Image 1 (tube, helix red, strand yellow):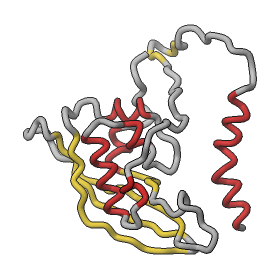
Image 2 (cartoon, helix red, strand yellow; image 1 turned 90 degrees about the vertical axis):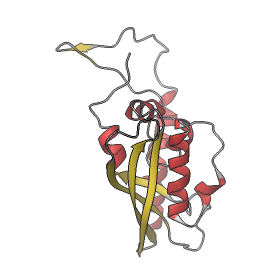
Image 3 (tube, helix red, strand yellow; image 1 turned 45 degrees about the vertical axis):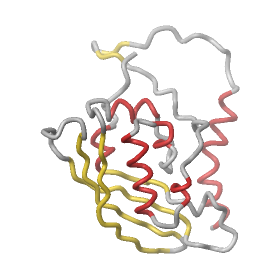
Image 4 (cartoon, one colour; image 1 turned 180 degrees about the horizontal axis):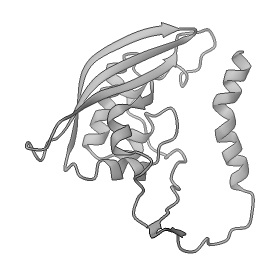
Length: 180
């Protein structure tokens, strides 16, 4: 069981790296058009080479949520993207928060529970625009997961990672793509 989880978590990035060298280096040309809507490929899902805030390694998920909120407020999207368990494109995060002059994600109550070697945490959040006090507030949750101090767990497995967000899902939904 432990090996299958390990493979499931590491196989997609390893496969992506292996496939990255396949095929000819050909310029794909302009984005394809479908029914008048331009289709744009998201190309920045590879991990960014950024230094992570020390807070991203905190055992307290509310501290990690605060570091994520700070990265968003400072529009450091490559840093914010590193808080996610699954790769999220920095362009997609930037596009989702583009209408916020200064996104302010206020961290509320955190609720933590454990199950079968994993810890889960749900943090309530409120999003507002610090530059525009009249902008409507958005309320939601950010969900985190990490290994539950199991023997042999690596520091990376013990790091809280975002596995879901009602705030970000609304802002960075599949319908949004960056301009081509």
